[in-house]
Image 1: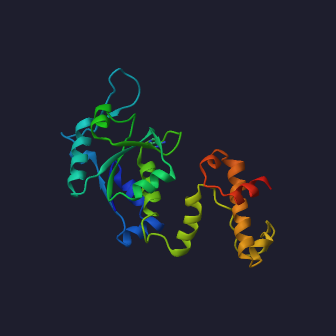
Image 2: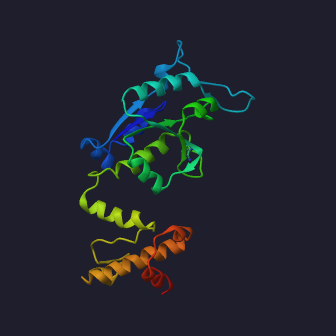
Image 3: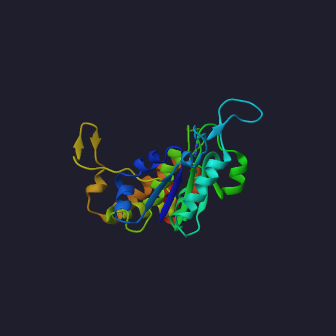
Length: 240
Ligand code: ADE
């Protein structure tokens, strides 16, 4: 899949995405990232990309024309049609379901704002979706774009190693928080590994993990249980 990033700091996103699973996905040819800078499409000696807001107030607003030309260049770089996704705190919340949907697209464009935001006429004319990564304000859309790239890249077929994909499946499919994990040593001054995990009893281990996942979800994010795929056995474990 191909993701184009339109930003005043495109390297910010492409560099963050150069490591770990996302870096590997690129090396394996599963993901191509391309950065585009609206400043390269701005006119005049100063290559101006922003101006003061009409109506007054603090901060600056990103100009329509450099962004529009930059989006046109990004679109034209590949014949496949691309949705434009604007990262902003006013967007719909990013969820794993949305990540799965985006992971199935052949390409899309991530549009990052800076300052107070982007002229609303550009948003109305060019943006297909607006997404937020949470109810807090970042100083630009770049970190949010990196979050989208990471979450989408790891779902590309072949991006994760076997062990990683197994873990991923059990978590993502049922909408619960993950269970706790332990490794060596068994005994440590900070505590002992739960005995069941060393029992070799696979059914017992699976039941313990499920119970932990259910318990944590119930304690920390009870609202997730409304949407989670729960079996009759799960409901029993929750009541236990
Ligand atoms: N840009 C600034 N804050 C943001 C947020 N919370 N999500 C997405 N983009 C943003």
